[in-house]
Image (cartoon, rainbow, N blue to C red; front, side, top):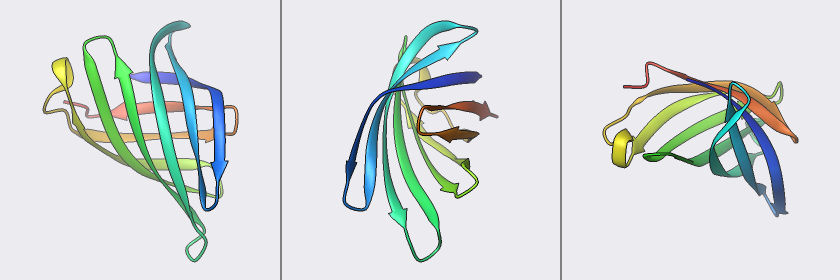
Length: 106
């Protein structure tokens, strides 16, 4: 599954930020997510947790983003139609949104 993520709100805090996003597939709104990220100044990466609400349930994932804005991580769980889901999430983003791909999401 591929998603285009558009940031609708962002709140910065000391050491990180929180985003509220709308998620689109083939130009159609299919869900919303909340992203919480913390900066790791020692390793020059950002560690993030995301909760994605889609019709039929939720998907949770954790990932790390580099200064190149590429990110990759793991799908750590889901509810409803997505109960038991696992796999890889990856993509690239900036402060306006991201392109996200779910790989081997079973």
